[in-house]
Image (cartoon, rainbow, N blue to C red; front, side, top):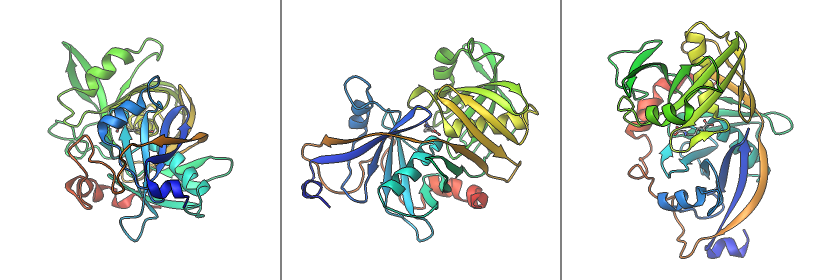
Length: 320
Ligand SMILES: N[C@H](CCC[C@H](N)C(=O)O)C(=O)O
């Protein structure tokens, strides 16, 4: 390990993206990592900082049956449970950094374990785990699960499908992405009181049973060019509403993803590209070695915390 890495003071990172959903990727195995939430917010700025939708952190495995821990921070500094486009970039990064030579990489996120299958030319297939519709898991304030729920937003009734892919999603079916009220309804639903931990909001335009278009207003990042977990949630919502088949191609603003879901209890499979843009060095004055900073949501949960337990049982069937 180079001397500069020992001295601290410099944080090496790699800028990557999955269909334009872009990331600051950090190897926290080979170097100390500590970025407090307010520093993440500063660095996510596309004019005064590096510019990214999320920070992805590679950590040593916290349990014997996974290869790495995978931590995710939104641009607003909040730590979250899942990032599908990020999972593909994570797989490419750990291979290219020679942190593993496996073709199938298992990682532990806050939501549970997911499997990443490295394909050729930078493409990766991710087993995104089993979706949940249980209000308590999402979390979503409702008496019981349903295919759709109706929420009141500024005096209007809005019909949504609510899905957890480890992180919370609401999906609306719209006639046209061009006229969908993403800029207004996205933030209004993200912060709706029915979502105690906020939510990612997908706007789905079905073209036929195997093709759809999607825009996503992401929790903690705003509208992004693509959202992998959002695409999984949208496929599941479209299937449950009888509008999509088990396999579909979803076109996001940044490009297409291929997805499949065989129904209740099955995992969602997602395949898509990755891109590595540049490697960077960030001076970190007074950097201290040690574990990542406490997240904006009150610090790191201990392993096996309520959050993971909340998801762990649900996702037990996710591995192929
Ligand atoms: N904004 C999301 C995390 C990133 C998800 C997205 N970038 C993806 O590809 O799944 C959340 O707060 O749950």
